[in-house]
Image (spheres, rainbow, N blue to C red):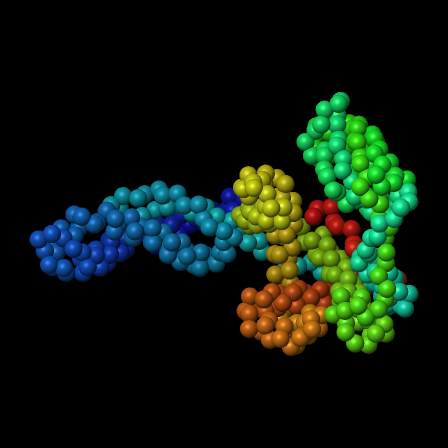
Length: 436
């Protein structure tokens, strides 16, 4: 077998492979022998069909099958011989594909980039430090109460925070428009659920009142037919209900699975959850900074094939997330290209850190992570057991732990500054990078 390799770009390789005719005929004959042992031909007993008949009937198909298998196997032999690491399936172009002649074909493909991860010495990381104070627990209790607010009908003018039950009909230039009308809609004033001006115009209404309001749709409204236009809504108020916060009692605690310990027991459980959230938030922000630093310090060219595969994954995720009837391949690739490149590059860099520092998942940390996740459930041991009986889920946890070990490896050499902040600041989501 003859092999020659040409570099057509930094990552693309054009490999010409020649396979001797003798090897092709050996493979063809092998398939014909296999066919002869089982072929059923009228006038002959099974296994007794003359080879001349077998060749006449089946040689063309056997040759096509042999050539396909030879291309696959010789390509693999060639990349092993040339010590190449393809980043996707090759595009194969036959040059000589004739009976009795050597097979010659060209395989064009990309390889994974070879690089050394840049030094971590200049990486700067800000690591937040925070505690859960009693006042933070108090605030969380208020949030939980508000999330479980009930409403009671009142006979007074509506205020912000009240819930209205309304019917409304919207019109543009005197004509009703699609999606502009509804009946029996529950609306909390001040929630920002409706377009600007709609809720404000209903402050002060009473049950049974009809009010005409004229809010304006935002200039960037998703429906371009309505964007920037002023509509007229006739709103009928069916009821006005005031918010009522639940009491901190056993019935409320039971909503969260807390049946013993009263208020102190509930506060203890809430604090545990807040501390867990705090640890995860701090860890996540450090990890994001590390990953950003790895991306910035390793501007490596990425294979187009990997980017294309990642775009397809992102398309599928988008369709699944939004439940659209559109097919994934109908979404423009350009929408996902930058994010796909970023994810591919980050994957390559992280993999190189793992390889360079010979990292393997720390099984003690894997178990610790599973136990921490399981602690949020009523029967944690069952959750731990479930993870260890499911290879896919266990593999995902191992991948997360391995990423954490990559972060730890970077932090050992990076310049890390600790910053004391409040609980609220620590758990506040970080702004997403523009490239994402």
